[in-house]
Length: 450
Image (tube, rainbow, N blue to C red):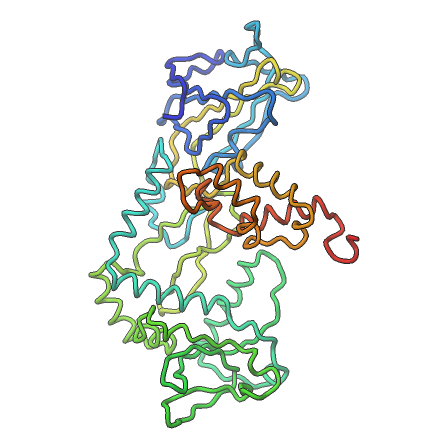
């Protein structure tokens, strides 16, 4: 129980009486605040440390606070709350802000998306995720890993620069293949959120066998031919050569020969063999591997991701980037906090939650304010190591390792994920590093910054 004290039937103004009020000590982080049913209100009173920097506890909520939203208490419109009083018991002027809270995959189950919930916890979310993973048999995990590998290669493509000869080739495709490629390029452009795409090789992904008859994956150009050599069937690009200039820059991966993937399933995916794919997946459904099952991905409204990170295919078995759609939640958050000049005498913030969430419980993807402020402080103190700092270097830095051992003394090898699960995403860490670098080096870390 995070709350230091719990009260019932607490009046905060003439219109509102809280059914339950949870009171938290300074420094308490609440990620899943409880809310009420269709009627009533649940209050969360956060006591703040007046000697520390003032931070809104809503920034640590797993729920995003998005539109429709607004505020009151600015200008001549002065508000008062019975719970926000000074040391003499007098009510202090405050302002009130309100917002609603998510995005979900378009392949999700509509009925599951609208299932309401009133209370959640990180432990409950982690338990449900672990239970879901344990339901997969080893064979199902093998197929899932294979599908993820194939989808990752399709998304990433070949990073080699485009060959001028490739750009001038007359490309002949079936109408179905041409339609899918046009849709795929459009979906990839949408996932970049307006950022220009880097020109790279537009080669086709094929499944091949190396000289030792080991399976490999290679990107080849649009124009390719088949040849039969003494070590088996291969597909080679006319631009691919061990000796040609730039030919070795094209993608080549020996991952399939590692034994981590189902070769039959992988080869069927590369070849577009719908009959073989359907047969393998039909047998795997009994083992827990079902790509047709509804997606469970739910993200915060503030997430910049526009496409679902999970693998989805259309009715023809072709890979698609499923868009994330906006869910409108009926839960309302009202935040009451005193004006800045009264924060010393009234160091408290009240959050009132009303109505249930009509969407699944989101994952704890937001790093609490107290944690990322510590990371910012560490980055600001790195001085000469900051200009060329990367997430990998940050994780290996002696200052960070000392900080993690102090925060998690019982863990033999502590990581940032021990502080909060959201830090397992290195994009979060890269964002923090970039922010501090821009603050310390506004003209960059190159010659202009000297």
